[in-house]
Image 1 (cartoon, rainbow, N blue to C red):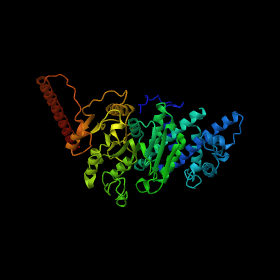
Image 2 (spheres, rainbow, N blue to C red):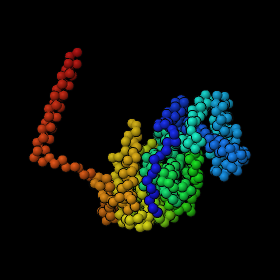
Image 3 (cartoon, one colour):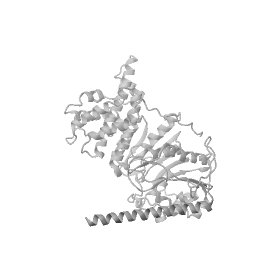
Image 4 (cartoon, rainbow, N blue to C red):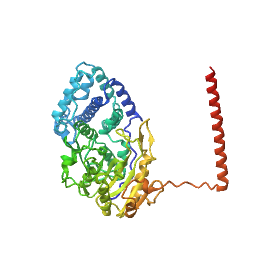
Amino acid sequence: MARPAKPKKENNGGANLGFEVQLFQAADKMRGSMDASEYKHVALGLIFLKYISDAFEAKHAAIKADGEDPEDRDFYIADNVFWVPKEARWSHLQANAKQPTIGKLVDDAMLAIESANTSLKGVLPKDYARPALNKQMLGELIDLISTIGMHEGADKSKDILGRVYEYFLGGFAGAEGKRGGEFYTPRSVVMLLVEMLEPYKGRIYDPCCGSGGMFVQSEKFVLAHGGRIGDIAIYGQEMNNTTWRLAKMNMAVRGIDADIRWNNEGSFHKDEHRELKADYILANPPFNISDWGGERLREDVRWKYGLPPTGNANYGWLQHIIHHLSPNGTAGVVLANGSMSSNQSGEGEIRQKLIEHDVVDCMVALPGQLFYSTQIPACLWFLARNKKNAQPRNRSGEILFIDARKMGVMVDRTRRELTEADIKKIADVYHAWRGEKDAGTYEDVPGFCKAAKLEEIESHGFVLTPGRYVGSEAVEDDDEPFEVKFPRLVAELESQFAESDKLTADIRRNFKILGAH
């Protein structure tokens, strides 16, 4: 497959820079003492309602302008637009936002939409009438959300609402901390996975999809490279019902047709896409899960490279993902750093077999503090079922190691993000190594990247930690002769010692003065 063209610049849809941030801050002020995990569903449900109502009203106006009956549902079905009954339209809710019955009106709207659209059955939140929910806050939130896309055309309004929904998901993940990581993978990590895998055409799968962020970024990638959304088919599974509902709403807000399924047993024990062979798999499984029920899966066909330990699901996830890859499929998986070097309970033997069978394509060590849910350092595994045919240049018997631990910028006191320049640098090296057209020529860069042969990896005991291979960053020679540099550095050190002695004396003198008083 030819490598897609460079991305087009993203269209901000007419919204001012920082619009999502300002809106989230304003909305967050309204929640008062309500927990972020609870308030999340209140706000996101309303944003979803505004989105489908705006899309419906735009189609309604277009049908009417064509002289057709705007109440004929067939016109909406043909364009994949949700039918919104009159009592569920945003204009009706906005007009009644200050009424004490607004909670019940919103619940009735959600029920009416679910009744009219079978694909949304059981998805929407319907507890706005509960006594604990402050109705004045609810009315103010409706007024605030009414400002989204108010001065834009219908299409731009939908785009802005999609961006707002995505931003709010991230905002609530940050507010919830550890619990937020259960439904949200940081955007910069997802962007890196997408830019490296380039899911341009084919089947995309995520066995633990959370709120669907991998799918949203894949869709953005296709559109940015001039592709068609119809060229990708999306499949997902999520075992947390509340998170699954967020994902279903997220897909609907983005206009993405996706087969996302839920059961409370999860992908290991009740694989909803048992027969699926995906061209691209993007996944951020929960790290180091110990109670995954592995003892009930001892004879499973997925364990081609060895039995994953019952006390850690990491190598279960890797093998589940490889099992679901098509003959030339590729995958990107986020795992805890321990997965690269652990030898406990047979993990080292499984890793050795993965390497010897040549399914490991690339390893990326990530910087710390990227995730909401954990401070555990993480890495990316890139897997390929057929390295001979899955990439233009034959890299069989070789793995690319990238050490990105020094990358990223702190966005607040506790969390780091990869910049667009970081993501481009990492992805460009990977594509150059794979020999893709217009990707440039690959070269090892000390301290950053190294293409290592199987023999070298074997000499390191089949450990896949990039730091073992990339070496130290090259230090530029300043051309200062040693016989000049050494005396200069000694003089600088002596000066610092003298300054330290002076500060120590000053402090002791001040202590004596304080003691005299």
